[in-house]
Length: 166
Image (cartoon, rainbow, N blue to C red; front, side, top):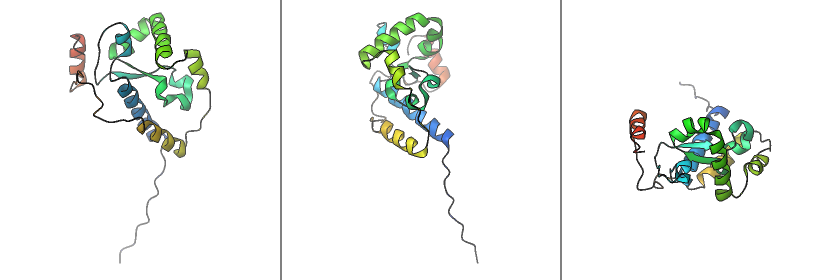
């Protein structure tokens, strides 16, 4: 006679939950911005690409759990603006960030940062609540613009980026 196995109780993994929420947050931010780099758009360029990055306006270190998964704390940037331009043109980024926040969120960076001072414990309940909120923002695959450049690999993306195709 075989022994019956006891059902295994799922253990809540904070690291897996944070990773999933970050992925959903990133997708929500990019879909909200229609995958367009907001800094390039501010400069009058069109840069729409599936590989564009979601950037935290108030860093995760400063915004804590509360602001890390809030889509108002995100902006879509292309690889060039996010990785290279952000580090080399700090003053220009701060000017762009402040103008973008006023136009799109209706508050300044200082006001936004002040809202993110609340300390929130990352629990399974918080995870479920935040996940539901991110999914309620309408995450879906059919929300992509027609002129979206889809590269199959990161190498192909970088080749197209250098050619200014994406």
